[in-house]
Image 1: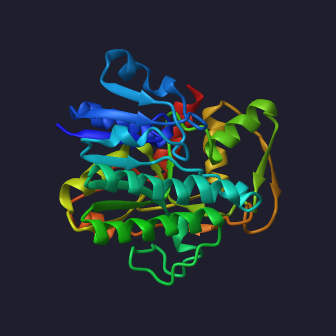
Image 2: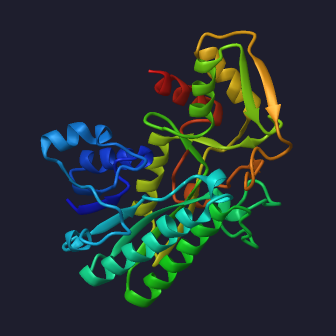
Length: 310
């Protein structure tokens, strides 16, 4: 049994991580200001007393002392809005880079040895090698969001080598599923509920990317921790195929029982500033340790659409 702290644990991915930790018998503390998440995602755990909760922003003070005695921090809290980062990058810099620095400092002060960090495929920018391996260079993010995550990776690496910590850094593809409140599927459902006859699609509809169901993602995260123990361990996590936006729209419309929906495309190759139109990650590094992906992009999209509609 471990004492694990989960920042952003009331959010989409964070709450699924909490589920896995509770199932493993760990003591869990969630730190979250609920700006993106909700305690409803943790209701059962909070009621049972299996999870403790602190409603604070990482940019404030007071939460740090609660890390004392901690074994591992899952740092998931972040501002994930790629589109907004092109207009107001201040939030990304504060809530991603500065917040991560404050988490690392708190870990150093209270002797927490292990960190799990959720990074992103956007650190690769417009990669010319697809599927893209962890060794791909140069890392040239094309969004402020991707840049902040890459900066966080560098900070984490420096702390691990300077202060005898360990880290597992996971570069995620598009993670989707139950409890998600943003992203293309959520956006399509919202738009089609407002207008079942027409769907606006950002970009030309040919953007093609890898998608992975959140439960499969969390299992991959825990597998990497169990099978890799270097000071800094970097892994891609995603499905081994990809799907384009029009196919996603077809799936969402079908799951909503809609037919003959008109698609209206806005923009060119990129749906927005900072959008990477083609992304598939190589997961060979994790597979070499024995992990196998249990679902495809299409299966993940269909399962996510059903869960979000429910």
